[in-house]
Length: 618
View 1 (cartoon, one colour):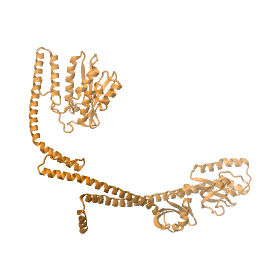
View 2 (cartoon, helix red, strand yellow):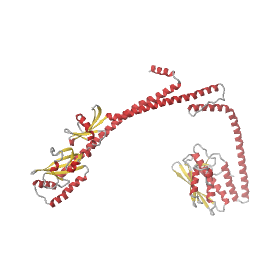
View 3 (cartoon, helix red, strand yellow):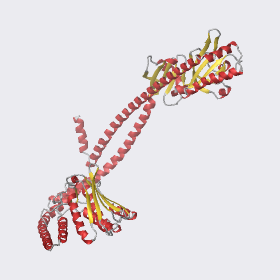
């Protein structure tokens, strides 16, 4: 083993790198493929043979059950006919030569023959039940009672035995049927005897063999036959096979109940012989399956698979060889670039950077070189940006404090003059300014957003003679849940400007929240305003989905689109903003948000208290 490994290593050592890659890839792909194909098709052949054997054995059991059922049916039907007192009395009178009046014949046909006919027709397994009597002077009462002369047209008429089965004959009772006979009939033939008069007639209870043993005539890939000590019965499609191999198969028939399957070689090919004893007919029902026919299809498919695999491997070898050459060409360019960098030439670049792993390596080297060149400049710029950020933060704090202090002074002046409405408006304005300017995080709680919306309505009510109030129907456990900051105020503003601006009486904006499944809740903002027509609503929804240009969006769409985009970007595609409206009735904006008490994806909440109140008074 070691010597062989050394020989392979020596052979590979003398080859180029591209050839080594090609041979290794070819070996890695081809050897497992061939082994897998052989194992797979071998197992497939075993499975197909096993399934075929199971199907044949199941078919034999079903056929055996059909034969037993048909035999029992024929026996019971024959006993019913033999035990019919009226039928026996009629046959006795016919044998004695008594004359029948027309009324007697009509009554017998109506009451007895009609009942027996209905019995036969009620069972689809039965083909015919006929009683043949020898008195030609007594009329035939079809389809039950016939003259014995008609029976002589049947193949078994001269060789029948009472209580024995007559197999595979043609129904030629009528001349019309003799011209177009019904083949493959089997029947239980019984003599009707009288102690004094002897044989009164013959009872024939017949069924179709292709109903009882359909496998004999279906023409499948399985050769089936009923083999008795005296004869062999098979369908016409398998007649040649059984003429050649019938004696050999009969010699293999096993003893004992149940299905038996054995392997044998018949006519130069391997076969499986499955047989079951059919005691009621005194023989065996046999099915022969050719293993060569089953294996031939598998072998053909296996050879086609291997041929196709070989062609694919040839194409793979060519493609791999060309691909390896292309990859190594760029690899050596990278090696040359690294050598120049080692000599101190930091301005060089790796040429022809592609998108595969070697291209990614070249790109990383180029980025590394750029990074080395820009490192000092980036450090200086970073320090400068940090300084500027500190200055801007300080200026922002100074400006915000200045505005708050001015508003606080105005509020105190209004309270001194007793203008508490102005003082309340300034308080609401200050809280809105502080909330909007204090952008410490992208998320806020639902409680904070509700307080900001109330402050907005408190200020907007100064413009109207009527009042617009916010009716909040939010369970307390949902108030701490996160949503993007400044989400509710644009929705409430749209409700006021586009829905309730023309109202001349007090109006209510309803805000309702409820759980939606196990991971989300719905926040619904509804106004009882003028709504919008269907065309405008469709255009607004298309704008929210990004299907129309911003300039083509309806008036309420700009702020809603901003809120919708921030919800989707923050929480993912399962969370959204939707709008519904009816002209002259209402407009409803629905937000689907995550049902989680903590911020998602590590996004922090704004530092405001959960109840929406400022930490320090205005």
